[in-house]
Length: 239
Image (cartoon, rainbow, N blue to C red):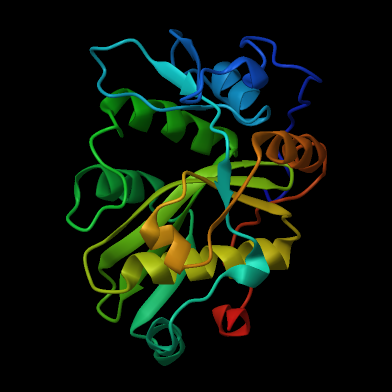
């Protein structure tokens, strides 16, 4: 995959969606459509994301208020996670098994996602990955087995993290730590985690008003930032 940013020019306002500010109090923007690349890129570049229940139900698109993000300098991985990365118990990589990470998030024990990662979601985001807009971080143990990971959508300086999973303790946090160190190294400016949870809160996630989030998204998606082809950055600097 090329290290150059893939070509995509976001429009000023959504082309295929109502304005995100028109969302319901719960954050629902519109129902319908599918998970083709054109819709997904238009959605993410305007603060909208899909959150299906199953492939048998109409797709719902959301823009939450407030929105959860992780500021890079607020992320606090545990010393145990950092030791496991430093010692080689965990080894991080990017984009070596995107499908494996998505399936792990959808099916594996310790997943931080759930059944909302439907077969259609896997197909749609795998296509985005082949186009250069979706990426994964893999965590393998010393034996080379995939034991955790995370994935998301990258547009300009925005990375929208979707889900993570672990098969061994600490592997999902190690994936997030490796992702954040990589994003900082590459010059990204915004990490979206959509919804605050006690787990993400313990890791440093915070909430900002949707209005502020949309302003930051509009700036970040216009920047020329490349995800790269190899893992960069040192999670030890995130202490």
